Length: 334
Image (cartoon, rainbow, N blue to C red; front, side):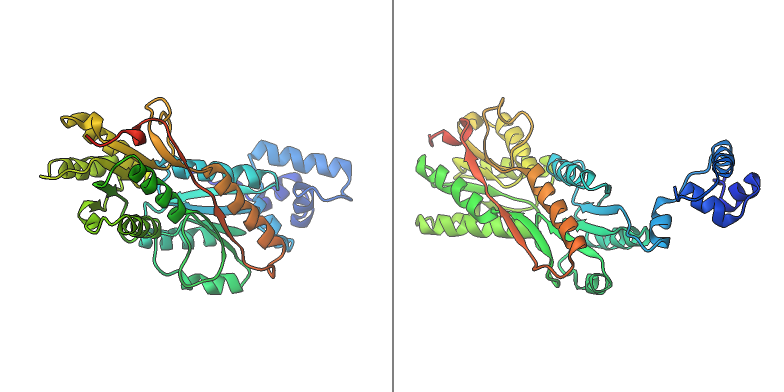
């Protein structure tokens, strides 16, 4: 395995001290032009690459790296989040390191440790675990932590979420207004805060509408399109199938559409999806929409502000949601 040359090797090749080589390669002034050129030529010929993180920390500065632990990078929602974070950080000369927990609390904890070992200056997390109190010590030691999409239990940190309950209420009321009573809710894993918020509001709105048995149409576990498809197929095969489906995440919406495509009369079932997604407008899918890129941008903005002023008050940012009616959510029950 070929090892990258060290600063000591560059100094030896240029015939200068280690300190002089360091000053040249870190762009410090007061080095003779001839000496500077000799060191730069030696570094270029050897293929030396400066360790910017180590250099910043050695000079008493801060790391320009920000870690982002996301739920699942294959999901376009998290890609949009990462895009918003990266764009904002770029404006401040910061760089993003992204890793995916796959909604596994143990993997999230492991990734947190690995990113901290790389001396990230801040950490933005979409929490998968139920308790993040272990990070209190890191925060006390100066680490900036911001959570996005879901709050973190066990610590009081800057948080960016969407109005999950308001979005769910709007979606259910939209379907009720179009004559539906048998409305199914198909959501993600039960341990996720977003699922808990959306499912609880679904049941609350249905109870307000005097639909006392709405729980029989509630399903969880739709973390993939395939899982959602199977859950909706099971609902449609019941003696009294739902006339409408609220798919509580973008993958659940895709799976719902697959199940309806395969079911007799599926094109008559109303659908509202939580999260907009690519081609939803061309497919005439009614959705609960919000700006995921802005969500990421606000999280990065809070991380930058917290790093500059650790004593500033903790902020909770709640972004609005709204129903975009495109046709699928406006079908009336047969």
